[in-house]
Length: 367
Ligand SMILES: Cc1cc2nc3c(=O)[nH]c(=O)nc-3n(C[C@H](O)[C@H](O)[C@H](O)COP(=O)(O)O)c2cc1C
Image 1: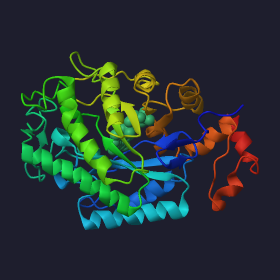
Image 2 (image 1 turned 90 degrees about the vertical axis):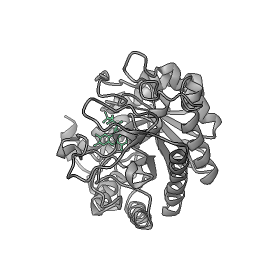
Image 3 (image 1 turned 30 degrees about the horizontal axis):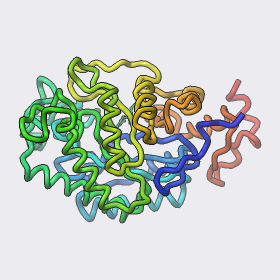
């Protein structure tokens, strides 16, 4: 039987060998936005996971657009040079194509790293003023962001463009805009966080306007053949929040702006939201978007086993499957999935002696 998960897919001019994607994962290990040796280690490892595409973590398009002091950025020549070094390293030793998620954290910026508490930075921790669609904080103890002015909107839009051009120069294969998890672009789209009374607030069309302007500007700046996509929200998990139907409308608009794919995630717009925690949580949202918006669609969220991932693609619910924590737990997840599903993935020659065909121990592990 041929595996659907291990069948190729083309996004714009980029050929991906299979449908497995390493989901973007913040590492909080950069130095003023500059990638460190941790990134060589982490991304170098995942470039050999068997996934066709590794998406580099949410990367701040401006210094204050980062979530924490440790988040990766792409707003200086130093950031660009360090990213180019990471990309070159992954290409030299790995097999995956490399994407990057460009992000602005908006009202969820100026926060502590998870292992420091994940709370808003306190006085003495070098906090900064945050910006968002409206002056609506993420939660009760959070910084109240400043409502973005026209000048802020222009600067942030140009920041996305400049970061995208830096990513292209650094050798990245695909770009993804972060339009989910309550960060700046999501804060415009969601009625929970957007209370504006100008042309950027009110109806869904008005709330999508700014993210679409950003998407159009980035699309115009990056090569046509380079896939550009966005991670968007399938559900805010709150009454009065975004729904899967809204995700379809947004995905159609992004497709109209020339984007090549979407990833449907959910949650994160408010500390009050209670996302469902269950296997395949977001798969029904992806299925609806794929069917109704007709754009290449990725699903993500508690996908752990090869059979789960295979089913999402084989049953036509998603075109690609992203995994985050399962990849941290097993950085060769794609190798093991290939073995389970009767497919092949390339391994580095240094590791070929552990291939199931030549290593008797692989059979013991499967028992
Ligand atoms: C350590 C870690 C860092 C994350 N950072 C990001 C990020 O930079 N951008 C993003 O969109 N999602 C981020 N996420 C969310 C994941 O990409 C993914 O959507 C989520 O973990 C659900 O997938 P999973 O069940 O496979 O882990 C992060 C998750 C983890 C565990």
